Length: 500
Image (tube, rainbow, N blue to C red; front, side):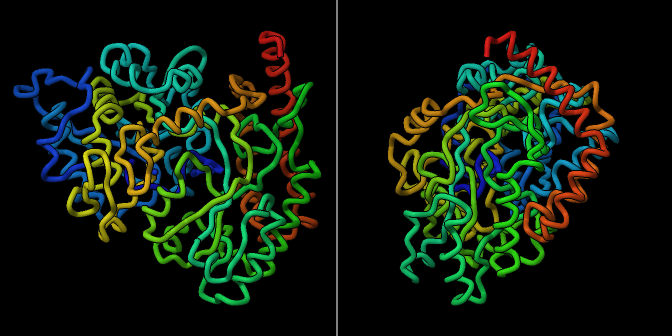
């Protein structure tokens, strides 16, 4: 696969994840084999005027982006008579900036969307995205034939597809990640690390002995791992993972969240977390400099190899949760076509090529062969020093299962992905999509309260004893209870209809 990456699904996942997050050729790309080409034929390419597709996607802007896209455009112009202008917006800013761009009608053709960034379901229902059913049938057959059917089926909104999901890991599983050089240096054992609380002895060792290292590399959208399936990702309403009655709870009032916030606050006060965490949208600088000890990320098979190849030093991980299939993991990485796109057919041709053509997929993912990476076999590669200037989030860029393998990856890596996908356990709300049309004002008001309280509370920047009651009061005043009541009505109907 490509070289990446530090985040996978999301998530994460979320958690992105992602999580997740929750991750070719340059001048020599033209002599490599193409993908399926279905729906990506010449279409009179020799006589038609080439079009430029405007693509907005998530991730920290890369130094060599323009250099790589120049090579990409040579390839796409030949294949589908189109070039692409890629615009990257960092993870922490993506949702807010895309809301403004879409609302203002800014020109765009393709845009990243997901369950956790620029919400897919809500924006599909608001008309931001084009319905893709006919476009997939006519120009995206390669996509339909290539990706796991569960992604297309599970990401339908009111019976229709509005984005092309990335073919990647289907379940979401969180792991604790560690800089192995520091583990080895202090002979630290991670076999007993299961919970946030169990991290304390390791974090204490690093804090006391490594003044230049950030013990826990955390960003502002951090959330503790809690036993909930959320109605809307990172909103304070959910059902318990083991629910039998599907009753929605306000997680801000749950003992699980209160306990977790106390732990994070303790770590913040001890200096294990950056003092600026509540405004930190990216810790890429820490990854590149290796000045971090641990964090949490969404995983996938052979993720440690991927992270190690990306950073240039060994990274190891241990499970922080079980593999569950959520709505947000099925919808964890998607590319939509703007409802206002001037070139929807060409945009679908590009997405089809991206998801079926290894040359294009690896070029966008890993950069220019001989500059950012070098091939070590027909389907294997290793990063070169310049890869630090082009380190893309693999999960966000389409079908990962046509990426080159990193050194150390087994030949059956993608078979292992299929096994991992089959191992996932369905979360209780899988298949339920909340229709927010009756509570749009309340949703907007709650989002405003979330902007004020969420990051400081979740990252330990403020004292939960003082601020959690204030947050609960503000969320309720903004209409959270009304949103929960509407969601409960819909869940009850969905539960009855599906014999849950």
